[in-house]
Amino acid sequence: MSALQALRAPGTAVVVSGVGLALPGADTPDALLRGAHAPGRAPGPFDTGARIGRRGHRYKDRATQLALCAALDALRDAALVPADSADGGELTVPGDTVGVVASSNLGNLDTACLTAAAIAEDSARSLSPMSLPNASSNVIASWVAIRHGLRGPNLMLCNGPTSGLDAVHWAATLVAAGRVRRALVVGVETHNAVVEDLLARPADDLLDGAAALVVEGARWAEERGARAVAVLGPYERRAGLAGCVRALLPEGGDGPGVWFTPERYEEPGADVGSPVPPAVPRHDVTTAVGRASGALGVLQCAAAIGWFGAEGAGVGAGEALITSGDDTADAVAGLLLRGPGEPLPEVSARSAMSAISAMECT
Image (cartoon, rainbow, N blue to C red; front, side, top):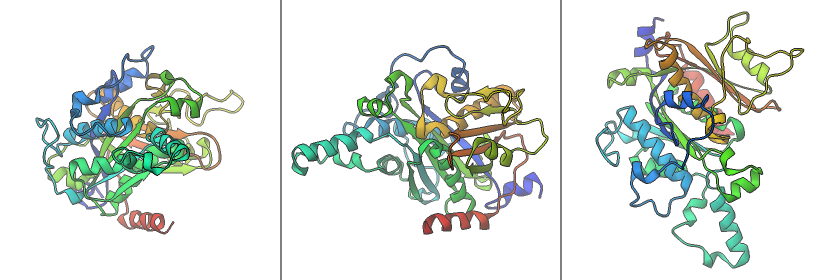
């Protein structure tokens, strides 16, 4: 099947058609990529009110506000909402063609802990009816969908260090299976006293921000005139980093153009050897933005898209290897992200639907 045929065949290829960021000092993917090399951290927290306004957000937690900012940015970038509208405005496509997959391990941890403490100290009568909904684990995905009228499948993942890449994978699976034409993926984490205490890390070593992607069937993106900024390749989840990389990269090849490593990855000794050829450039986005937990995979995809623009000399060619998780049992996920100049891969809609059925049964 040619690239053009793949582009026009439903369920055969999934592309990224929009990127959004809510990070201090990094408004675009290329700025996020450059930030991986910048010494120190950007000063000051991200001002959510400057992007989405403050009206109606008083009782939303910090993670939800950050997610709404990145989501609006991505929807604008994908031309799914008007670029000149202050609040996003009406969708340019039917709401039931857009799903939401959000990832956050710690986003509303403070609300959940404070709610439990209030009940233990007094009773449920002491809880505020305005803040109580924030204790729900799916509050981030729900508010993003409600704000923009996204009526497709709505998923919230809290899946440890691989959660962000898992979210990208399941969004792509929903699209490939024909459940939706496009899906908004959001990864967000924030820091506060509860998170700092749980992780035993200072605030300046933890992410306070969000990233979002619009993943879309290539055919549907072409039909509405949207530009693809990346093409989703294969995804793997394995028991160790080396096995995950071997499953994604062809044996004996030169390796990808760039490798976005797991959080604070340390190269093994010479006697063990790295799973990726040493000549391949390495990037760890968390050195600039802080440890990202459930938002990591989405941030890595955004940085990879910045690399396509910077390294592809405007052509968008190349291949980025993205890995997240640690080297423990069943805790490493990997994804190949390809530049928009690369040929579109074939994806089986039947296998995608089988994966969804397996998830539903589980």
